Image 1 (cartoon, helix red, strand yellow):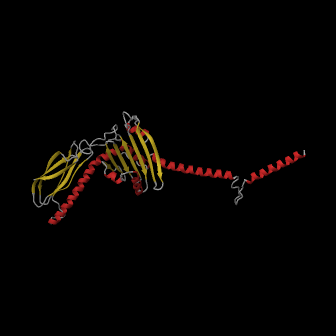
Image 2 (tube, rainbow, N blue to C red):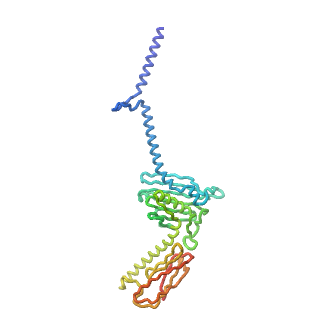
Image 3 (tube, rainbow, N blue to C red):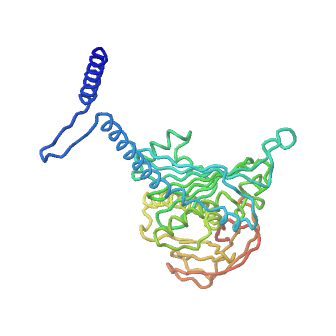
Length: 373
């Protein structure tokens, strides 16, 4: 009995010792207000990790929310169906990234032609795709630096070598180029760069094997998808800015072929005029008076109506009549039509102005004029 009592007392002492050891692991810290900062060390550690995890998740959500705005600028599959009048294009992938160091956001998407099936034996690589990229930037120099890292050619060089280029709105520059494999369209604003590349090796969506000049040259229409996709994105950007435009990008780029030709001729004419001024100055001819045909222009409008205008400055000899010959040329400088006009009773140093219109259904590029002897 005595041994039993000693055993019970010894067990009680051991239990008491264990409880004190357990309570020693509990630390209670009291701040200046007397509030408990933490009850258990383990509990404090868990709460701290949870707070950091929640803070990280909030930041990630904010970043995803910010970048997702670019994804929303992409045309929806429903809109693509409306453009093509049937279900053809479907998104295979789309994602966005943020380069915080240079403050550049990008959205990338891939469209595939779901009417075609990849067959590595019979129809190898026959599935057409469209690659879309939207870049949002704040600094044009940062954009150029970023572009040099992801592309083998600079933006300036791409636009310079473009087949077509044009300006749908103030502050927006666009270009189009193509090969037998497909086409590329890029539009650049002061805030966005939009690029669309279509790979259409078997030319199931558009004929990209046409020439760059001549009557059989490639001309865009509303079915060219690289241009159409960029147009849709541009309009989505402008819609967010409460700006509505009904322009058709392919028309603007189409007419730019003639603009580029005219700009080239204006430059050449200006250079020739500078040379003429130098010669006249050396010969002592009147500085402010140029004799012969001046201010000549030949412009075709969207209805294929050609307007010819200019003036003839006579010299010191009176003339009863002069005959003007006008030649109309195509893009290969072949004569497709010619006409003559007469100016009568021209006094000494008189200026006679002329204006006329004609319509030519053939492929017209420019025209020339000269005085027949």
